[in-house]
Image 1 (cartoon, rainbow, N blue to C red):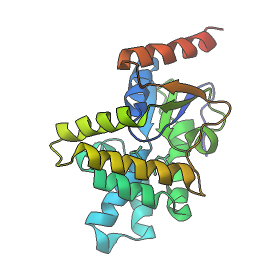
Image 2: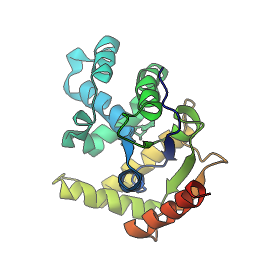
Image 3: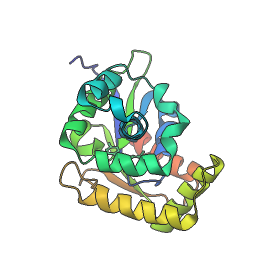
Length: 218
Ligand code: C5P
């Protein structure tokens, strides 16, 4: 695999709806990094499993991943709670993870020349996908805050769902993501913990920016 030298690599892990996506995007824009929300790939596979049952097999998924681009991952259909739940079940499968890994690694280590580097967020980014990242963050927030954020997001998309349903779903997903045997969500020792519960988007951004600038300007 080709690897670009002297690029900035940022790895973020976080539980569902902790604000990692918003932060990842704003940080990437500021430092001109290629950004990937890796959960979207698992969601895309879940979407195929639910909506294109007959086509769902290893060969088809492999082809889909090979032809994947960021635009395809912006599909709003991937955002539903049902897809998120299915994605978290699929993400326990070793073979599925293998298919997704090479795409993520290529994305992280070989971004197009116009970018200064890459920023990926997910569940196993800090220790499996970019173990040598220049910056590692574990972004979290309390359950109530995360539920409210996801609930508001889904309401904006006109999804029919109650607060309690979202709460239940996030709890189930946390249990599955933290406790699974393969690539569980965890905070590595070398990751910086950012709790976004009581911070605005701007405050989170500035907190991370300060950490990055300190190291870059040294
Ligand atoms: O981040 P998002 O909520 O979109 O992720 C959906 C599911 O995909 C997660 O609950 C998790 O089980 C799985 N996932 C993963 N590894 C990643 C990203 C997401 O297992 N790097």
